[in-house]
Length: 213
Length: 334
Image (tube, rainbow over all chains, first blue to last red; front, side, top):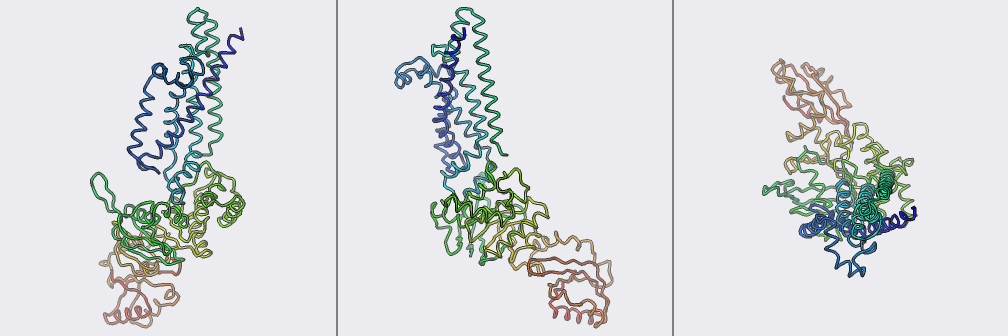
């Protein structure tokens, strides 16, 4: 019985962890760009900000299942196939990236404008401000936001599983839904709940531990 | 050291033009503590922020240590800002960094190596007397301690100029006093030129050498603090001085209630040492009735105020006034 759950759990962890990393790689710089190009910010560029913000919003408004199907050709181009746990990384990362970008942006907005101004007064460049002020000062908020993203991705990965990507979602649908095995369904749910609770617990603890305010 | 020539700053607010600074010219000498005082909205904050171009002046020229700040390009400006320290009303420290890291910030921007930074920060911690708070976070410090850290950060790179944008406005009177003392020590030790803007006459009185009074974006009066206190020219200046000396309430002294004439005497510290009033009544045939009095301790000198009623013949009073004027006492009929 345990074997039945081990592989799907590992598959879910694989999808969630890697897509979180990819989403961060894509979303982090976008979030920083969104923040610094805002009106009155350190690299103000209203047109660029408007376009980038628009693209981010478009990606955020497409429901995950639809995004996944739209991305099929793109996924095939990158991974070589459309379905499977590795193929699922593409839509998962792309759906989480704009979310991460907005989290970065709003975390940085929490920083007191005066702190950024004093860095400018000390002669810091835009790059130095990003590295030495924006990221470290908003880190606790960013950690809390990443926690939220991971939890979202656990849910999305289950949806990806529904169309054959593997993982816990796939297990729940094949056994629970198609074969009416309520016990398998329940255990799957419990594992997912434990994952979510665990991630939330660690994320909250970490965020408050590093916050010096 | 610092010269502003015809500096103006206009904002556009929804099609409406707001003039925050209007053709301001002033000159601050090396090692001077120069105050700019005004009510909120007078444009003083905008003006001081023009000096390091946190605010771009609309027109005019700003010269700091022989360099025309207004003509610099972005990179040059950034470099010159490293030689202009600045402190703020709300301290603006990095909340997630220790005192050490906060003070090290401008040194890192100068690409100093770790050892040099450590030595310099330790030196600065000594100056601000917070050696024991090296690894504390700003949230663990009091307001006064935070401003001390901000001062250390502002002078870390040995700038020639320090700008204070309402640096003591968020502090209680006792803490304000200690911060002003620190700024004065720093000036005396490092001959740094300080421009501070404030709305508190107490601040000007305590540390400034010279002061400019700003109203509606313009400097309406500029003088040494001594002269300003002993002989204010504008109504705003008088109001500022009166907000401090609560003992002297000219409004409640109604000259009609008295038989003699009411005078306001203002005198500087050196006249205060002599028994002018007793000589006045002894040598001239008049009666002197003291209604109110106060002494303001200035950075350089003391200024005394007396409101007196003089009774006697016109001639005697005239002679008495001449005697007082001769002794450098300023007289004003109320």
